[in-house]
Amino acid sequence: MSAAGDAKALPLTSIELPPGAGLARAQRGDRAWGARMMAASEPWLTLAQDAGRIAAGLRQPGVELWIAREAGAPAALLALAPRGFAGAPYLKTLAVAPQARGRGWGTRLLRFAEARFARQGRLFLLVSSFNTGAQRLYWRHGYQKRGVLPDFVAPGYSEWILSKDLR
Image 1 (cartoon, rainbow, N blue to C red):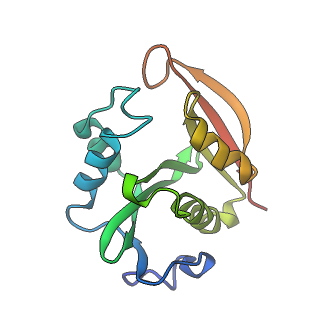
Image 2 (image 1 turned 45 degrees about the vertical axis):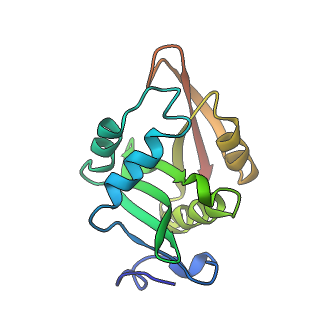
């Protein structure tokens, strides 16, 4: 389990990683990889989000970017904003590369985010109304719908506000 010096400060031990896998803060080039991977997948394709716009969002001040790796290659990313939603922790992005899907990365990264912010008591996120796969993941982990933001990212599509009480 790779932590790049963050193991004591963050709950990396709260998730089990497969042999040869690691989770660490983003390194040089990881944002560009993540932006390209996201721009080529849903929901970003439907929302017409290009790699440049996505990369800018991943560089926002106060956003922590975590990269999961398998055998040294990036497999998934998690962007967290500790004070992102009315001052509460916000899961900005969880994305799994196509070749790593179906192997539990979504669940692992979600558990990591929850452990990371357990003391704050609540975690918020947005999910696109048409992104049923992500919705299933969040429902399975106890997230509840708190509201709807119509036309928030792109005209014609709603984002659902979800949250979970972590206490």
